[in-house]
Image (cartoon, rainbow over all chains, first blue to last red; front, top):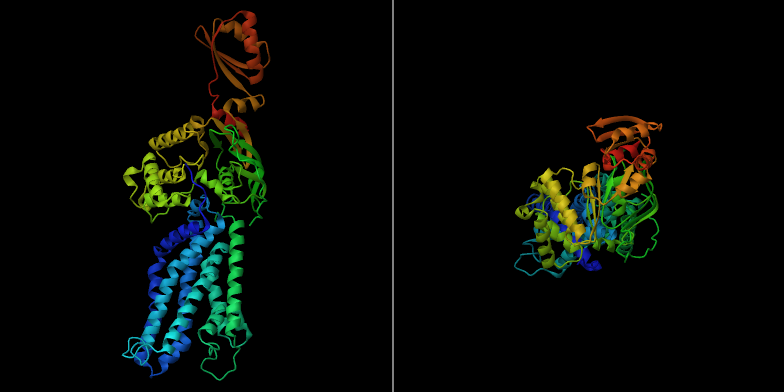
Length: 272
Length: 322
């Protein structure tokens, strides 16, 4: 009485819900959960210690990088490990020997990562925003209703955070599929491309996904290196950022699909 | 990463005697190490034992069958379908790997339910089937406990339950009895036999000869990545070339029979056992089995009983290894 193969959507949802369960029960969860409080914590410190107005600047330029950095770390530690851990623990064979298909397993795991990281990333961004703006005129929780400018800034922050989770989740899922030491490779990518190149004022910044997300967060954003200086920086247009990020995401998806179909899903074979 | 092999369409077997697994010139290398080489085999319905020492290529064959790895060359089909490019075949195939892997954070019932759902069952059906199959595998008492706390035998039973939960037609088991106590082994044998009695086919690997001998109707023997022999025990014996052989005979006049046989050069030794028994060792199995009946007939000797001590799978295996 065996049944037929599952439709695409149902199989993706099944694998995704399973992957989200795996992610939420992993040992990394508590440590990474604490990171979510960092934006709100820093905003609170700035508000209590720095001169008035500093927190506005932090919200405009620093918050996005911080939130993106944190969701990126969550995508890295969870996403890079999802498939790789299942390969090394040899549990991936359970999914590969069901009528699902290899690429659906990979994309289902990616969706599971989004199901877990996206809501908590958005909550972290909202909490950071609230810590910056709460009680200020036109801000959150004040006597005056939230001003349109404030609401727009929050929406932009949430959109960029969501887009960053979708992008980095796909990127680090692909890393997990390709590299044995996927977390280390991911950390190197984060440090070199987003940490170093993303901070530079010149064209190398265009190699950094973070540079594009920062552009989307604030049209006035130039680069972290030139934020407080008079230096002329290489700017990225918002429309260019959207096109580049969408194109890069599509490429990542296509490469993931191809590798998932052609890959040997046994972590290693001892020499016989 | 090896390049995917093109999908070749085969007819889905409709006849009950059609092979359930077909491999053609199947090979797999791990860098310079040969995992499997030039394997061509048709696995018939029923219970087939895949026998070979560690490193023979049994697990590589299982991984190729289940699409976990790609062949370096050649092709493989299960129930007429390619396991990598036609994953729908897993609606009808259950697999239990040799790895001691389970979702340790999940209770056994939840895990088996999830895997049943992946095979297309609805949530309610899947949960009921999971409970039934875990019960059948002797896990009723522990199905709501997390797999992480299970003993090795319980883990193996849970994995077999996961392979059976979607009611497959073909069951692939890689070293299914490893780590089980004698009772556990007996239970697994019972499960396999009842599965086969219900019309299912089984391919299981083992390096333990008597396990295969006890259950399998068909045997494939592998070593160093090659298929040495395949068929029923009798067929394999027939395929073997001449070999040293001992025959025990009970007849009306063993001494006369032995004397006539000794005149032929291949007899190595004769030991008598009472008035009517003799154990005759020959350097040529073929010569002995051909000459003995002819001589007995011509001398008018009545033969009561013939037996071949040691002519079990183990002896056969040792001969093939040589």
